[in-house]
Amino acid sequence: MSYRVLIDIDCLTVLPKSGKRRDEVISFCSRLADNLYDDSDFQITEPESRRVVEVSVRFGFAITWWVDVPVKRVVVIDIRQV
Image (tube, rainbow, N blue to C red; front, side, top):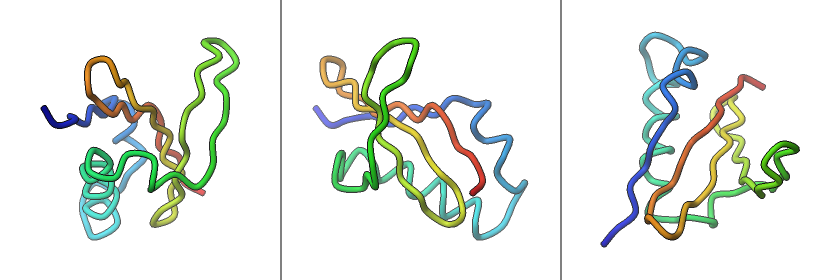
C-alpha cells in the first residue's frame, strides 16, 4: 500500500489562486508520498503535540508536513510564504 498525501484545506489559502507557483507547490506536496523524508530541509518540534515535523522550503513557501506511518499518509499541516 502506498502513502497518501492529505493537505489541510486552510493551507491552500496562502497560495496564489492560479499559476505556476501554485501548481509547483501542489505538485511538490503530491510527490512527498514518493520521497518521504528526502525532501525535508529541516525538522522542528511542535510545542503542543511534541511531534517532530518536517519543513521543506520550495518556490518561496515553507511547507510543514509529517509522515503518519501507521496509516501510510503524509499530512501537510502548514504552508507559509517566505
